[in-house]
Length: 74
Image 1 (cartoon, rainbow, N blue to C red):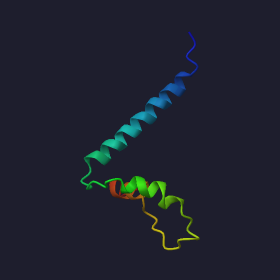
Image 2: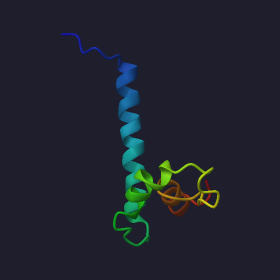
Image 3: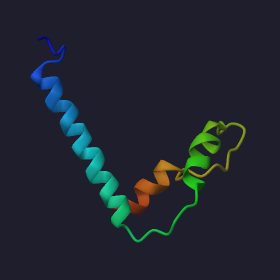
Image 4: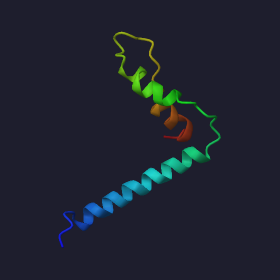
C-alpha cells in the first residue's frame, strides 16, 4: 500500500497542525473582547483597498491586529 507521502512530509504536516492549534489556544485564552466578525470583514474588504487609494490605511488590521494583541513582543 502506497501512501503517496514521505514520512518527512507527514511530520511537517503534524508540526504545522500543532503550531496552528497552539496559536488558536493563545487567542482563545487571551482577554481580548469578542470582535463580532470585524476581523473577517477587514480581511475580506479593507485588505483589498490599495494604499494608493487610501494613504491613511491602518497597518494593523484583521490578522495583523490579532497578532499585535496576542503576540506583542513579536
